[in-house]
Length: 180
Image 1 (cartoon, rainbow, N blue to C red):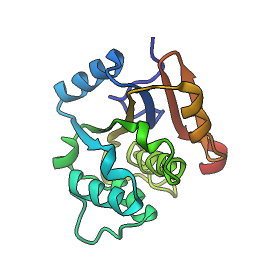
Image 2: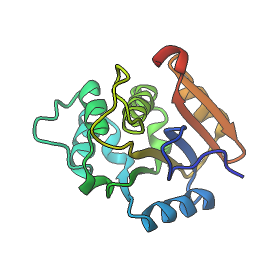
Image 3: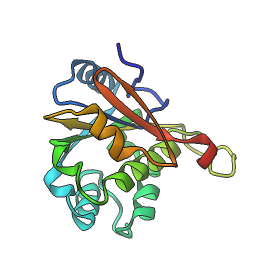
């Protein structure tokens, strides 16, 4: 049994799973059935920060003014439009995430994805005022060929995140004591 639902506007924002995890694929199908979008990323394009910015800008159709830095990535993830999300939600699936696990930027990357998704999944701005758009389900799934729950957990555990684990997943969300 999973303790996450990537079709809804609820934590966790990042989920790491073995490749082909049936529960994730059922949820992806459910999201697409209600009009949401699934976008796939090849981990080879995410091995460097520049490659990561380029891949996200291309796959998620970021605007031309995207600043190609971590803060701009958070902002663009928060501002995704209906053509990318289907007006319902989005899941970014990173295939073959094993190679990313040792990348120096991997822990920061997970934190940035959580920051952007946390904002997109909210119907209020950072000051608590209502937004002029509904909350949009936004999640990211890292699929591992050789899923090592303990190794993944060690790499993404950091002060600003809450990390939870199950038999076949490691999940991350922003730590509310640090962020809210």
